[in-house]
Length: 186
Length: 385
Image 1 (cartoon, rainbow over the protein chains, first blue to last red):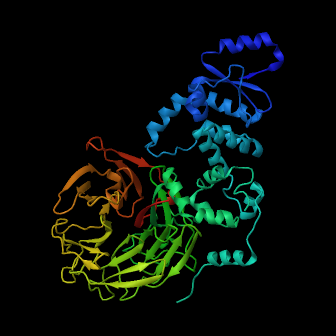
Image 2 (cartoon, helix red, strand yellow):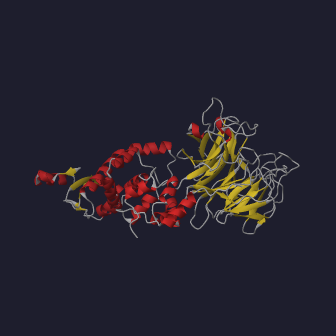
Image 3 (spheres, chains in turn purple, brown):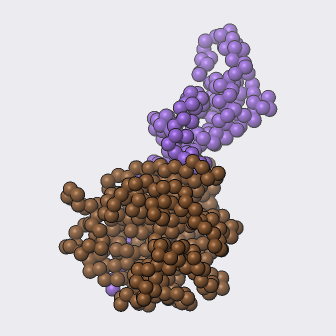
């Protein structure tokens, strides 16, 4: 939930006080404030869990100077959605999959959550998840980035990720040779 | 050196790259020098494994569905007379993730027929400095002429391509034992072109692309089963001699690469007369000196724990429509995968069973099988990728 700074100090103070017990307020690099459930933040982010446990949470907005407002809004949004989806997610995974692998495929809502993001927003969110130690969100966002390579040619992948082809002609030929079927007629 | 993925911290970019599917690796490798060295590094494979991203899969040599399906005309039983080179005799390599129920065909073998040899064997090798995963297809019959072949085909998951390996030396052998043991593919027994049961054995090294002759087994073994067992040994189970056509013995013998010798024949491994075709070994930690084996006997999955004269115990009845089992494979976490049909030539069904530690509550879960992947499975091996 975003707290609009323009709404006057009285209301903001009231909100902060009211939320004192079960939410934390986070402040983006560009000064915007976001509230997130303390429980979800502590469960999903090792960094926020550490700050909450260590008492270094600022009621007027804990400074997260490395994270822009768009990325932080997505982080908070993810935490809220995650909190809402827990019961059904647990139910589904125990009934159909064996649920033993450490990595679980993104849930439907997690897919939708990352699919709607622009390239830049996705990259910013990955960085934020990494910075905040949000293992699951990192999982889901990295998975999305790896999926962006699916069905693409090397040239298309280089374009999507802005990667320079640093192979020499000879090296490319070598790789091509490997792919040329090494077959001879008997 | 630039960034692995511009705009992302190195460790995050690495997390993205370990998540690409195995079928993406060949393309990823062509992006840049940095990406190539990343996916070829031993750390890359360790990280995949550590994060549970590598999955247990089965590689299956499976009959390809006819291009224009005729009603009731499935995969023709291979022991029937060959018709006119129809598509029913075309086999391709397919990967199955039995837990997630995912199927993926591998690229076809290049060449005119593009079919895998009939009755070929397949083994998965995890050898080499870089831990490169490869599938090695050995022997079988020419799909057109049905002549026994000495051909070896190697599929490399990193390059995503097949290459031809050094041909299997010695007599053209059919129905031999075959298994991958610590980076090598071992072959033993079977029969030659005069239907003489064989005692000879050899090993293929895919890194060197070379075969080495091994000492002979104590017994002739036609149609034996080859397994990789504890201590990095190659176990050859059952089979029959030239004299005893089709009458299987219950003995087994193991080759130990460390001593380059066959261990004494172990009698009564199976009951005499039992075909060892469905025998398989469950994956176990390297430190373990014994292992669990499974096979199908009289419509039941049975298991055997430990070495020596351990007994087979019943685990569960196999579902009716998989009773004619083509393959049994034990994968990680105590799961057993049975691929079979209700009758010979029927559509294949896939069942996964998880045996609980307390021996209770073993039940089958049916995995979905798209029509495209319902053809007869004639050889399989399990691997993690």
